[in-house]
Length: 398
Image (cartoon, rainbow, N blue to C red):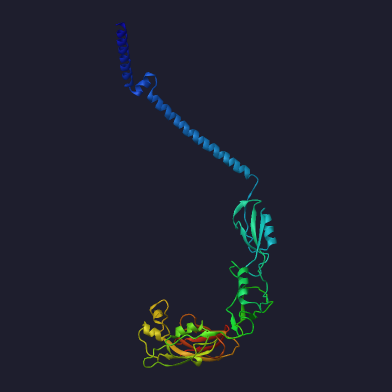
C-alpha cells in the first residue's frame, strides 16, 4: 500500500514539472532575454555602432595600404628622371648613339637587311617610338640596316630562270620593295636547255641605287614547241585581242564591210597554215573581220547587238560597269611594219581618246616584220604603238 502511494506521488510531481516546462517554453524569446537582463533595443544599437566602426576600420586599412604602395613605388623610382625619347630613325648609327647618350638612354642594336638601296648603317626603326616618356638609363631598341642583299647587278646568264626566281623570293621574303624584280621574259629558240637565261638587261656590275627590273631573254629549247590553234570564227575584236595576249601565234588581219548574214565586228574567216590544228610557236594565222559600216547614231544607249559590232560580247554589253560608250567608235585594222627580231618581243597598242584618259587596247608578243592589229576606238582618238616599251608610231583615227 505504501509503494502505491509513493508511485502516485511521483507521477503527480512529474506531471507538475512537465506543465511548468510547457509554460516556460511558451514564453517569447525576447521576454526570456529580458528576464535574464538583456535588452533587444540595446543590442541592436550596439550592433549598429559596431558596423560603423567596422566601415571606418576598412577605410583606414585601405588608405594605409595605398600610402605604403606609393611609398614603395617612389622608393623604387627614386633617383631616375623621366626623359622624352628622341627620333633617331633615318640617322646613321654613330649620330643616333650620341643623341641617345645625351638623353641618358642606352641603345640595344638589331641588324637586318634593308629593302631600300643606300640605307646601310642607318636606323630603320626604334622602340619605344619617338615622344615616349621613359626613365633615364632605359634602353632603346634600334634596328640598323645591313644594306641590301645585293649592291650591284650580277651575271645571271647561263642560270635557270625558275631557280633564280626562287633565290630572289627567298632573299626578299617579306620585303615591301625588293631591290631586284624580274620582268616578263622573252623566249628565244636556242640550243641551251629550256629556261636558260641567254641575255640580260641591265648588264653585270650595274650599281643598285634604286629598285631595278631585270629583263631576260630565255631559251625556249632547240626546237619550236607546238601551239594548238583555237577557232576564232565568230569572235569579236575584244575577244581576239584578249587571245593575242596569251597565245603564241602571229596574226595577220584583213577586213571588209559586213554584208548579208555576217555579224559586224566579228571574225568571218580563218586560214591556218597547211590547214593544221597545231603549228610551231608564232606561226602566221590569217583572220578576216566583217566590220560595221559607218552609220548615223541617234541613241546614246547601245543595244547588245551594237556592242557586238563595237568589239564587245553580249555579256559585256549588258554589264554597265564593263562597257564604255562605244556609240561613236571607229572600227578598223592598223597595218604597219616594225623591226624584225630573232624572238618574239612585247608589243602594246594604247588608245588616247579626245575625252578621258589613256588606256591599253592590246598587249602581245610579236617577232616583227609586217604587223596588223584590229581596233575599235572612239572617233578622233590616237592609237599609240609601242615595241619593247618604246613608242614607234602614232595614228589618228578619223
